[in-house]
Image 1: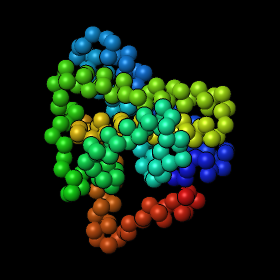
Image 2: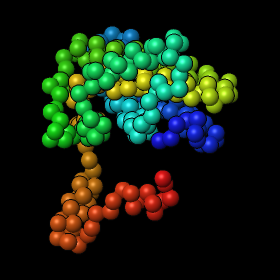
Image 3: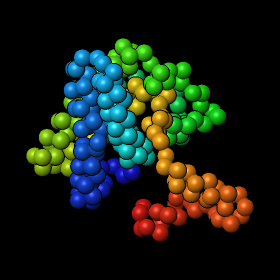
Image 4: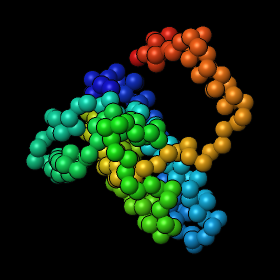
Length: 229
């Protein structure tokens, strides 16, 4: 992922609009409403369904942001309030992060690399009070007010240089969300049923591959065929 300021303006605006309109933000609003309702079996079921949407939104954000390798502090005037805040947050993130990027990519798919120990806390097994406490913490993270300010700048057609600074704040806020989830295990597909015909087709394709009747196609080849960089 390129620096925003180095991208073509149209390409940059398209990406930024995708980021600020990710499904995580609508799911967050629905979670807030549910958390303000009385706790009940029905409420818990709705929370679990909505949290799945929230987490899938986090996954889609991560897919767009995980290859952003630039230092979000580079080029910022170091003595401004924003630069000081982002520096504190980045130092906290880097000091407390226990996983590599590759390990985090595996975790988001619900599995773990051998080098990465599975977290002891499994979200689906948390007691109701602890589960609601976790959700309240997540929906109140800085990502959400940062997104509102970022969205307002986009709606005001702010200059790309100003949007670039706002993106850096957004990126660091995303990293704080990522860090908050690091000590928990969650598989968004857990408990979902697969159609029998899908499972049969999946088993057939594995058998064909093992028998040498089919070959794996690398994602790079798929992207190249589709013209996606």
